[in-house]
Image (cartoon, rainbow, N blue to C red; front, side):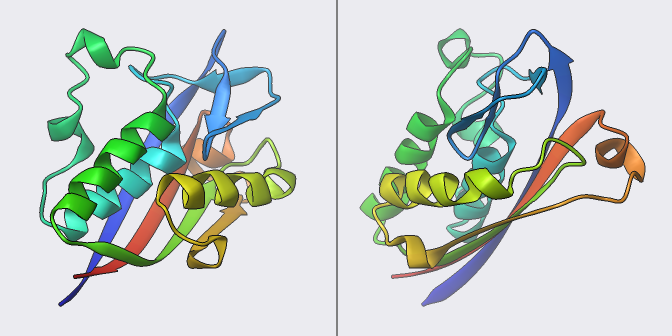
Length: 157
């Protein structure tokens, strides 16, 4: 049986935080605000995975009220989501993601993001697509207030 899942996440940019997207530290004057490391891309991927398997969402699996997830490494959280799906008999066919950010420019970091995600999900980089786009200065991402990400995943058992 094949299933598809969609994930979406958004975080506000804030002074004094590191910017981590796709498990990669991006040099930038602001980072994403959140309870964990606020990796918007990995959060969207986790929601897509959990949704495809009908396992709820990351807020249920990793509640932001739980102090053990404060500052958590989202690559480690992604590994836990992968293990949950794998233990339930699901395997990943492919993953397609889009990060929406006016700045910084992310193209040079995408190969490293794809590699980190693929290794964490125990799959080949050819199964992981990451794209970046701007919103031509429109909306909260276009004005530089935040960064958003979408992810779509196909799984089967």
